[in-house]
Structures are given as structure tokens and as C-alpha cells.
Image 1 (cartoon, rainbow, N blue to C red):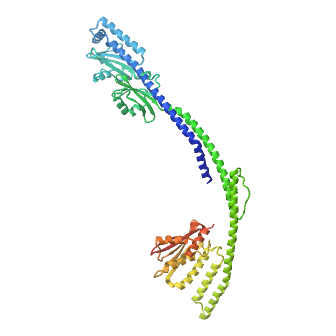
Image 2 (tube, helix red, strand yellow):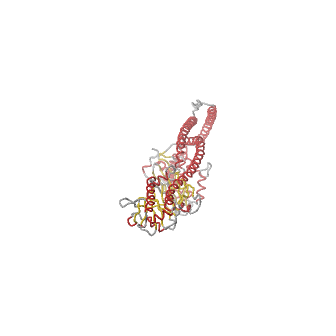
Image 3 (cartoon, rainbow, N blue to C red):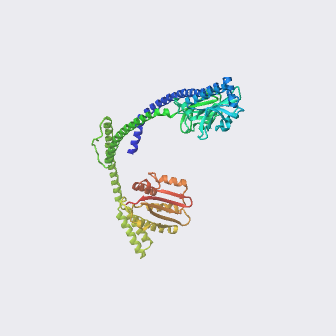
Length: 580
């Protein structure tokens, strides 16, 4: 009880103090989260456009190469002559060498540019910055771009592919920008190293991740290789790209592990840039607040523990004191000593009320005791009016007279002898305990008397272990139960009935059952009988008396229990603890 009371008070005071703090923190935390969310959305928009500007600068290099190679008709004709191997003049050679110098300058100054290809249909040669000259296609290792050119119907496009630059080198990942020629059938292809391009685009963007996507939803480049955000949200991104909007997508998306704010913006050449910022960046702002809240709540718990302990300790000091006062009052001791916990007006008033109540109860108990003693004296006086010795002497006189007339012991003598023993057994001090063996022997004498009256009307037999005979037991408990079975169960039968007394010892309890094969009772009759024997003024005096005595001696767990079925019989049972 102390523990439960302490816990209840602790939860009450902790709740009163902590709830406003938690509520204030929640409101403040929501405000911080919202402000940080707006900040992230604004940063994502700025970073997305910065990313697009970086990519536009990269595309400008490809556009510049196209303008140099295609805007000047004389230069285009010279390039055509040069690729034909035989028609080129000295001027053509000078112009082509200038183009190759420009290629070299571009690849040296822009480290992310891998190479530039100039190709005309119908010729088995290309102009490439790799070799710094015209190279035959049959001797050139990188030819996958040519398949893309012939398969595409677009004027300009971008793709991600593997480029095999030299026979002795491993393939590298590149982003190739294609643009077809206006004057002739051919293409200018500019190759960008994917790793270098990733660094150029991501420099200074402040993004956690970005992706370059074509209009078909194919991934061209991503900021970090170890990331599956694009695959996780592919369908959403493709649907946004196909919506043909200036701002196809700006939303919070998840990759199954974390949440990202994403902005999708057009980037030229039918491509799109997807900028992503991780939501964990604004959660980090809340972590110190959560730590502070935990410290405050720990302090609140400490204060609540101290308050709950102090109040619980004082309350139970009062309870212990009042229990001692009431216990002394039950023993007839009146304790008027002032308790040590009295410290304020409330304690003084409460103590005075209890003392007044105890004093009144003490006087009432003394008055009730006197009244009880007076009634006992009156009952004793009435009992003494008929002396038990007079009854014994009278029964002995009847026994001698019957023996005198018959000359030998008869049934009358045996009935008188059994009745004398029963009378003596019942008139002894009723509150004193006997052994279970004494109670069973007395029951057998009662059976002996009833046997002469009812002859073969019933058969009573016993089932119990002999070792229980020495166990202390209340007197006159079993005889009323047997008498009830005989008069109410067996007597109304047409033939012979059976009564069984069964006693079991199990788990420090004695279990008693009186079972008969009498007329039995319905469920409603059983309920009515149980209700009668639990009433103070019951007509079933024998059962009611037994039930009350069992409850007073052993507690409610030892009260009578009744099971019965109409036409089959009745079982009355109870249990008592075995004293150690």
C-alpha cells in the first residue's frame, strides 16, 4: 500500500510539473522545425538554381565547340576536305590545325572535358581531340557513341556511357553531349568525365545529393554513387518530368531511410537536375533541445520523488499512529499521548477528532461489555435452574429401572447411555476445542440413537484417515449436518438412503463433505437455503449455527457450500486450516 501510494503521488506531482514543460517544448520544437523546414526549402531552391547554372557553364563549352566547328562555312568545308584525305589544301590544313589547338586548349583548361569528336557521315574518319588529328574509325577504340548517333532522331541530346579511350586503358564513365550539324550530315560530340563533372556541379551547392536525368527518366549522373534515392522514387520522378511544368517537382521524398527535400528543375538538352537536401540537417538543431528537456525532466522527477516521499512518509506516520490508537482501544487501552508528527493546525485538528472518536468508542465498548456480562449472568442463572447433574441422575435412574424390569441390558439401556454421553458432551464449555476423534465418536452415539428410531431407513458410513483424529476441532459441527441430511434428504424417501461423511487432508487444510442420496434440491432451492443460513434469524437453526461458528473461528473461506440435484441427493462441504 505504501509503495502504491508513493507511486501514485509521484506520478501526480511529476505530471503537474512536467506537462507544462513538455507542452511548451513541443510548441517551441514545432516552431523550430517549421522555421528550419522553410530554411531548407529556400536553400534547396537556391542550390537547385546554382546547380543548374554550373551545368549551364559546362554545356556552354559544348556549345562553343559546336559554334567554332559549324558556324563558319569555310571552316566546315575545310574540315570536310581534311576528313576526305586527299582534297585538303594548305589553307584547309591551317584551319584544321587551329581547331586542334582549340581542342587542346579546352581539354587542358577544363579538366572535366575528356574529348571532342567531329564526325561527317560517309567518311571513315573523325576529328578528335584525343589524338589531336584525324583518325580512322576502324582504328579508333571508342565507337559506342556512333551507335547512339545513328539510333537517335533528335538534334541534340545527352547520354551517360562508358568510353574506351585507348587500347591500354580501362573504360571510363563519361557524359556525352551530342549536337547534329546543320550544313552537313554529321555530329559534334563533347565527352565530359563523370567524376570530374560531379565535382564541378556539386562545388559550392550545399546539397546532400543531386541527379542529372534525361526526359525519359534515365539517370545520367548522380552526386554520390552509394545512394539509391533515385531508384526508390523513379516512378514519382518520371511522372513529374512528363508533366511538362516549369517546376515539375518540389516536395519531401524518402528513400526508405531518410527524408529529403527535392527540387526538380529543367537544365537544357531535355535534361533535368534534381537537387536534394537531407532532413537530418534540421533534426540536428533539435537534438540539443531534446537533451535540455531530458535534463529538465530528470530534475522534475527528482523534485517529484522528494515531494512524494515526504508526503507519503508523513501520511503513513499518521496512519500508523491511528492504527496503534485503534488497536490499543480494542485491547481496552486508552492512549492519550500526543503524536510526534503534529506540526500544524491541520494535524492538531485531525488528532483531536481521532482522540474524541477513540474516547467515545472506548466508553461505548465498556458499556457494551457490561451489558454482555449482564446478559451472560442472566443466561447462567437460567441454565443453573436446571442442573445438568439432575438430568444425568434422572437418566441413570431410568437406566436402572429398565435393567430391573428386563433383567438384562436392552435397547432402552443403550439409548439412555448414548443420550447421557451426548448430553454431557454438549453441556461442556462450548468454546473449548476437542479432537476430531471426539467429534466423530459423539456423532456415532447420535447415529446409535437414530438407528433405533429409523431402523433401516438410512445407512451412515465414514471415510477418513485415522491420523487426523488428534487434530483440534470445534464441537457439535458434524452432528447438525448429519441431522439435516437425515431429516430433509433421507426421511422423505420411500426406501433406504445413504449418508457419507468424507474427510480429506490436503495442502494444510481439512476438507469435510456430508453426502446423501436423498430427494435433493433444485438450483433455486439451494440459493434460498444459502440465503436462509446466512441470515441472523434463520429458521434453519442447525445449519445457520454451524455456518456462523465456522466463519467466526476460521474465516469466510470456511463457510458452508452446498451442491444438490433434484432426485439425486445433496452434498454440504466446508474446509478448515490445520493448525501447525
